[in-house]
Length: 392
Image (cartoon, rainbow, N blue to C red; front, side, top):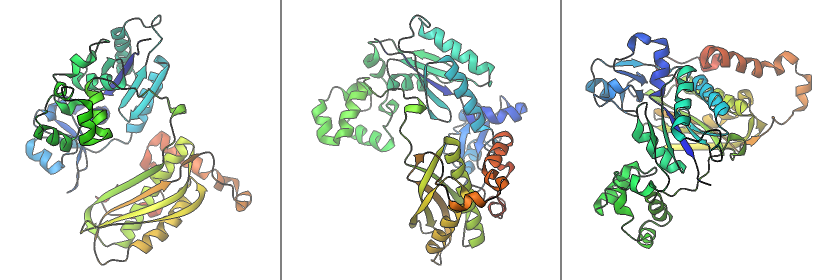
């Protein structure tokens, strides 16, 4: 049975969500990202990309390239729009795997009678997402995740590109090696030094030579150049649970303010704990990270009674922070990581039975408020005690 895999990418997703609140900026160069001295571009509209503005670019550089750039903050509704897209796709496709906030893999294998033509499937998906929640998409279709991903990248913006079965190698061969997922700038430089700049040039060298040069990475590179990929589309219910949930932030200005750092740590812990509760997970460990102005990094970790509530997690995190914050150097980054992730409810405590019902229900009520009105609709007071520009 021939595999039928699609990769659906939401075009300029963060910008498109931001434009829902600023429709007057549509058609103009727009970027979404941080506005501080160390802010970076999260996403740029195609009008801004014509000036060289790209994601992960410092915002000061983006403004230099495009002086009339409109810079907007990251919308608080990003997660809600992403979830709505996933819900729509799950109604239209038997197997859906979300790999990021704006990218999805779909498996239509075995649905030939319901959906005989791939382009008809792509057209149906494009129309559905354009209708609700009203976002543009690009879709790549192929026999595996690798081919559909490359096709999706090449089809942007708002395109549909299908690679027919049996033509995978011919499709990839003329492309620059950077189009193979996993080939970053450093590997590109190494391959260029070897005289390899196109995907087709990779398969002209025996796989044994690639294995000798790069080990398992070399073998994977060779197989991907052939268009081979056996990674299945895995729905959430079958996906292995994450090993950890991390949150960190780089400060707009280095600081030695204990109050500011504790406030940021509280905010990060709240955010990470919310992700656990949303996914029905708990953690059994926590770690705190500090990076100083000299770029030295220190971490401390501890075990915790299994939970997904930020109250007890922050108490442990605050203790770890005090053990870390001992140098007479300013801090440039602070982070928290929740480890030993498992499904299920928090470990029950004897005192829970003595806690008033209104206190026990408080986390669920807070989550409902945030789901309806956004993440910043309700925060702990200790998470708010920070100056402008220090928000994670």
